[in-house]
Image (cartoon, rainbow, N blue to C red; front, side):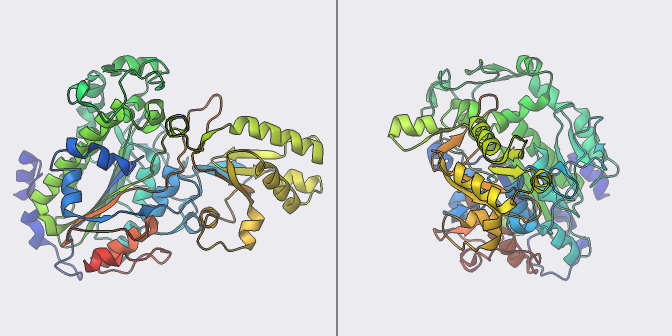
Length: 546
């Protein structure tokens, strides 16, 4: 009877009707559902800057009624979505979970590998190859994996995101589903690693061609454009804009899609991508009956802040402000839905960032006279190659440079009978002379030492003996890498917001430094379960005791 009724009303506001059908060894006071609201490129400054423009049901609701961790950070050297999501979901650092970057060199297989791409699995939900993904390279269990173990598989674990990295690494190994937006088809898809048969409700969602509907519209500002006083003007010449030429409202998304080669990826840079994630989440909770019994379920919902175009417009753009004003409405709708169905004490919600965002180096230097600048990795690596050729002979000594890591060709070094440690130290000393580089550290030095606390601790956190490069690089504060052909995609800002809400949590604030690794053990404490064995973070006691 309930199933038939839920089909008629989509089941969106009545999950509490079936609480009595479930049973668990966990406490009856345990939250029915844990929801992580995670935002890519979420600068803490945005909350204060846009506060007066937010409604009272989204960000303001969480901050006014929740417990705020106001000094929250990722302790990783490399601030990439793949690295940070693995840290967030496992409660430990890359040195343990193994996701040290988006890609790395597999020394045994002698090839470059991607953190999640896996050709053994296929796309479910479309005909593209964008679902050939898995969490096989994640070396430690996630919170979702632990929930599955503790409840003997009865807990349901899902993730939804615009991009594949956060979706897969939030879901972990044992999840019931991980979904993300397919750039090729505009559909929400998954991998056969998680889903053998695409659910009918998800198939129906895709059948509505939501992406095409949004693409056919224009992106105009939510409010009068003259009211966006926290932002720079919409036609600021320093903002390169879409395709290097469109930087003012309104935006014709269909035209941008065509000029971008027909990819739906453009949606990920607009508020409509976030709206799709929110709508898909609401459908999922109802159709998968998450939170409908006494066994706690876990859902991670990942939104994006303009995705790959964030640096084409910048932190102070009208586009970024409009994205957050609309995202505030999406979060408000999600919270209203959860509280209407489960009650505030029946949910545990945490809001945090997946990555932060740095202010442009030119802005810091020109407006505030701060020490900042642009570092050109392309020319620096070219100089390094020339130097190595002079010192060790003409050869292709460098195998890969990827996001602050340099991989040397070990096979070549051995063949030429060069001492590996000597070459690592030579490269590190050479790079440390460059303006803009704070530290270049050889992997053998990192492996042999311990750097608890201080600036070098992030090197240790991000170092994995089997996967990391030969040299790891940290840029000076305010300096940002940018080469001639690739867009800027880097942040040195480790701080992101963290707010807890629901499950009896009282309003409060702590300025004690907390780490992304602390979220998993804190949730485990709320649920009354042991955290995954590899957890290196600590319970945030101020949240529990407050």
